[in-house]
Length: 169
Ligand SMILES: Cc1cc2nc3c(=O)[nH]c(=O)nc-3n(C[C@H](O)[C@H](O)[C@H](O)COP(=O)(O)O)c2cc1C
Image 1: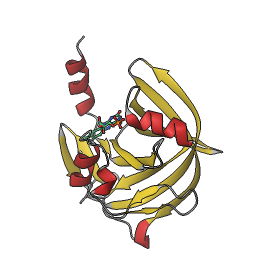
Image 2: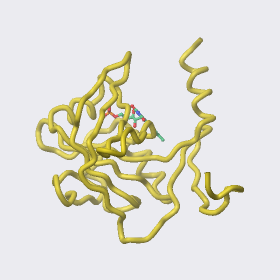
Image 3: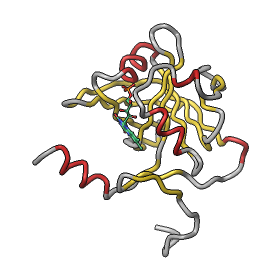
């Protein structure tokens, strides 16, 4: 089975979109768009993200030992494209601020929630690496609930709260 068949399969599984961010080996802010994000444990709170094995993000997180997970709102598609572009120094192009506790980069706009994580462990599997983060803080930007950005079928969409037929699982 080819990689493109597998990609087509996964496109049928829309997910939220986050920007992971940390500091690189030179202390510069660096980030990447990520939809492979999953909660792992409640006690203690842990999550996992999958990043390219040979990518900048893996090297930077393993160097710094912590990272932020920034959930994009429905207006964040341009930001998602920028952090998926492979360009260096995307943080030079966008507004950002240091996170509350670990002082790691957080994009100021188009983010509705941020988690700060300490790297617990990383597991390399084929061409990707699973980064397991211990969540040290979470916060909602400006205290309002905003519709999240989604990605599936090769396009961005916006979650419409209340549009699901059954509201509780
Ligand atoms: C909506 C969207 C979701 C993405 N999710 C992931 C992901 O979960 N893991 C990944 O490795 N790349 C993902 N990518 C691609 C990366 O953002 C892109 O390859 C980036 O340049 C990798 O950065 P790096 O080389 O610094 O690691 C995604 C791209 C888009 C547009």
